[in-house]
Length: 156
Image (cartoon, rainbow, N blue to C red; front, side, top):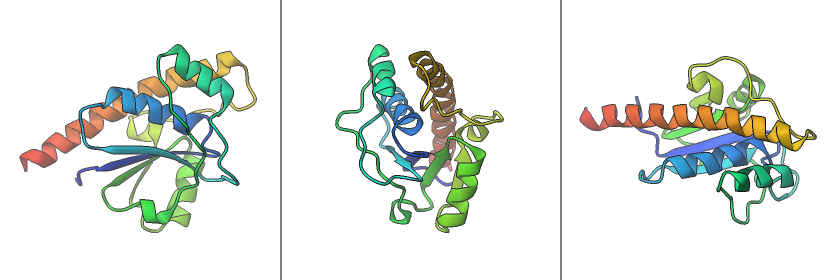
């Protein structure tokens, strides 16, 4: 099992789910040297984080300062990069379009669950809060799993 040095959360536009996951991960994993970022599969320009996602993050004492949506680039991915998508369809697209991506999972799959993280875009503040709560659990499981795998790697 390779040691992950980078985690990239991927959603459609990089304005809601993946930035929230990035902020949660940064808050939970303050001690490791893992680089974390978020990207989108369909990013036409550098939009800021969705205002409702920003409100939800602030309500949980989290923030992403000066976040701008960025598209996923193959140059960001190597064998030590863990790519976590929000849906199975996004996972398929990453695997099809980024041949160098070998550690690609949906976040639910990586966390041992099934299904997709539903996009709250266009929904109410409550929808964004529900998405945040789901991501908080999934990202916490992700941090535990990465730390466990990396500790095993360190003892080999």
